Length: 330
Image (cartoon, rainbow, N blue to C red; front, side, top):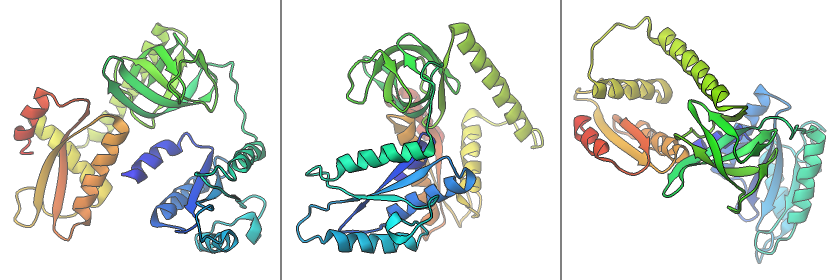
């Protein structure tokens, strides 16, 4: 689940801060992040960089120098090299010992991030129309749709028209990470946007439009592109009249086959255990993470299990969810 959420945020990342505990060293979760970093670097070599922060250096009994040497050796087995072990100028990572408890080394880490951004020549025009990435979105009582985003280019101000995927709105409130109101969000700034009419998806781009008409035109174009893509995907399939519930169940079943490598028997066979589920979550990011975690549990089981999300949505449980459960045998 955490892997899915990290991947969602990677599109908004210029520099990854890889935090490794001095007393634990490189963990399986650390390796997941390293693999994600390497895959991005292979696709776009100059798009992202890595800084290592060795935490818990204040813990009693920790030999900081020895811990750092051990971690550097572990990182080398995954082809991650720090300046101390002779990495090349293009590939060497900065490493900083830090303590979240005492604050030791945090100023040096911040300075290192600034240095890294200068080396990458990260620039943005804050006078342009705002563009960013949705990190998460949810529905909050009294506010409606709330989207957390990171601005990547230009600026976003209160009253701007915004579009993300098929979702649009006008910024009613704009808050910083401390949930304090701000007038303008600038490049690299994380913000909380209130004003979308419907719930955008985590990981989708968000852009500012000059007017409501331009926002509607953007959505119209995206709807047309989506319809063409769906038509191309299904034009060669055999036509079959099915109920709405069966269509949803078939769609999610197909995704389980495509994305999780399930090769077992079809529903109803004696060899497979079919478990339809209805998933509700407070945000799209959580929803996707929970779905992937549940399906993975089935595929990794020793039994032939298919966990099939027949319905997925965000918000509170509604009567339609209650009706959908028995219809989908969930």
